[in-house]
Image (cartoon, rainbow, N blue to C red):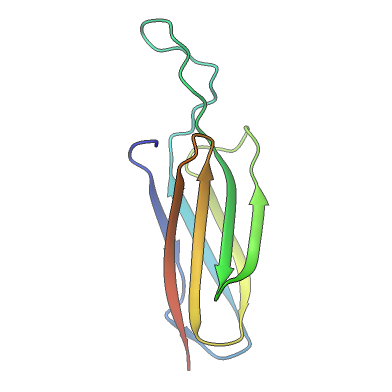
Length: 109
């Protein structure tokens, strides 16, 4: 597991049923290409975020595959429709098998 990884998300606290809202996510992650070597000449294992998903009440909203050229601290901004009150679940998958997730609730006014 990479150290210092911190997912952050911005989800409005409430919306009207049927509204389209903007979601923002950022994960602090160094990203290591696997091509560098440490001070002893040993290869540093590759560690990149290779997949990001967002679900709302168990329904997939976004599922994207990330390639090795993805930048450090990947940022995503996207829109989603809110049909009802519920919870958004955000998940990032790392090459080393680590999974980072966080969730945010939204109410319907």
